[in-house]
Image (cartoon, rainbow, N blue to C red; front, side):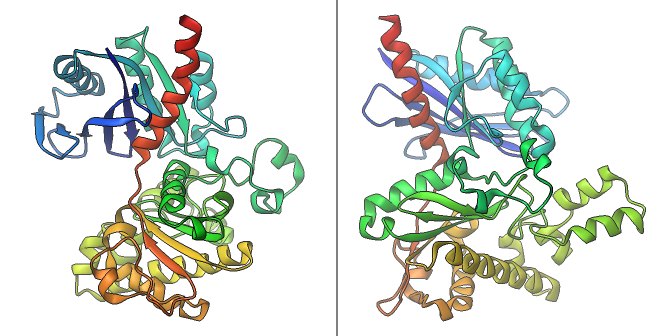
Length: 398
C-alpha cells in the first residue's frame, strides 16, 4: 500500500491542493485541484496529474462552509485513492515567526503559537490555519504538518533582517522575516538542476503575482529579500502597497482621521495595482486596458520591481542570474520585457522571441546576466518536506 500526503496551499480566497505519493524517492503527484470560495457559488475542482477533469462540485453559497468543502475533498481522496494510505495533511503556513526554520508536526500548542502571529500576517495567517482546525475536527488522528513561507529566510544576517528602531523591539521579534520561501526554495532547486554553474553564483528570483517579492541568493541561500515583518513590504502587488513612507501612515491617522483598522484595510485591500489603476488588481486586465491609469499602474509595477532587483544586486555585490516565477512572472512576457529594459544598465538583455515563447532561458547571447523563466511548485516543495518529517515517524513505529 502506497502512502500519500494531501497538500493544502491556502490563498486569500481559494485553496490549491495536491495529493502526492510519498512512497517513491521524490513525491509523485496523483491529482490536483482548487477549492474556490471566491465565486458566488463555492466550487471544488479536481484534475489528474495530466490535467484531465476528475471531479467537480458546486454548492450554493448559503449551503457551503469550509467544513463541507474539506469533507468533499477528503471524501474524493478516500473514494478515488482508497488503495493508498493517507499519512498526513501538509499545510503552507505563511508566518513561522523567529522560532521555526523547517517543517514541523502541528499540535494544539503549536497552533496557538502560530495563531498569535496573526498580527504579522492578518490577510494570510487565519486562512492558512483555518483548514488545520477544520480537518483536526474531522480526522483527529490524522497527522498535520506545517511548512513555513518564512523558513527559507530564517538565517538572514543581521544587516538584512534588522530595522533601524530601538533594539528592544527586535528582541520582541520585530525584524525582517521574508516570505514566499516555499516558492523560492523550489525555484532555487530547479535552477541548480538546469544551470548549476549559474545557481552557484549571485542570483535574484522574482516571484511576481498578486503577492510579489524578490529574493537575493548566493549559492542557493537567501541573503536578502523585499518583504519584511509582514507580507506588506517591498514590491507593488495586486492590492498591497509594498514599500511606503511610514509618514504616510501617520498622515492618514493624524490628518485623515483614519482608524488603525481602516489604514490596515487600505494597505492590504485597496492599494497596489488596484489602487493606482482604479480598475483592477489583475495584471491581465491592466495589460489589456487602454486606460491611462492602467498603464501607469503597470509602469509603476515594472519600475519598482527593477529598482528592487538593483537593491538585491547591491546586497549580492553583483548579478549573475535573474529568474522570473509566479503567475505574472511566468505568464506576462510584457512585464518581463519591461523589467529587463529597466535593467539594461546592469547588463540584462532579454531575447524577444524566447521571452514571447516563455522559454526556460530567455536571455540573449550578449546578456551579462542569465535570465530564466521557471514555474514554481509550492505544493511539491511541501510534499517533500512532509515526506522528510514522516520518515522518522515510520521508522520509530516499526
